[in-house]
Image (cartoon, helix red, strand yellow):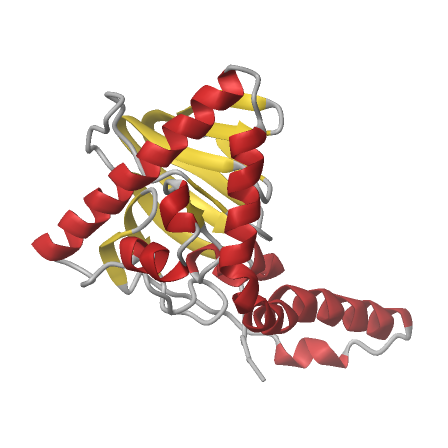
Length: 248
């Protein structure tokens, strides 16, 4: 049984990102387009400027980002963080950081999505830091942009077929992970909600004994400048905040 003690409010996940400044094939600097299958994710912009490009059933959209802005997207929305100058973001993730623990599929071309082993090899990073990690992160970013631009052009032309096909392929890729994700959900978001229910029951009964367990917690990033999906990532080695995962 997975245990996630002392989660952040609502059992959200947390990391900090500095958007990549690598120029892609379309002349845009930014991250690796991808989607999440069961998690909503939010960007809280803490510095700089840029944008987030999204693909959804409504088509293509670009949302400007600047300090103080908050933008969020629901499962199935392809998103690409775009660098405009010093863009820095705090990322809030549903389900205890599950988006960084496997609930993410890059918009690689179909030949990768149809071959799980080929996809995994292209998505993985061989190291957590150094030139080898940077080269691999740049390579997978470029591969994701290649597939993304095909999806975007099709949506802009009124054809949502490739986008829907990508969603189906992404669902096939992660299907085997669902049992493990379910355990994380039960230990995180579900357990948090049930705990609140129990506390409300206790208050209603006039028995607030659970307050005897109140306490204060604090943490600092345990890895700075890792290679995430959207940019260089600062993360926390806290159960239920940023789960221990590869960078894919």
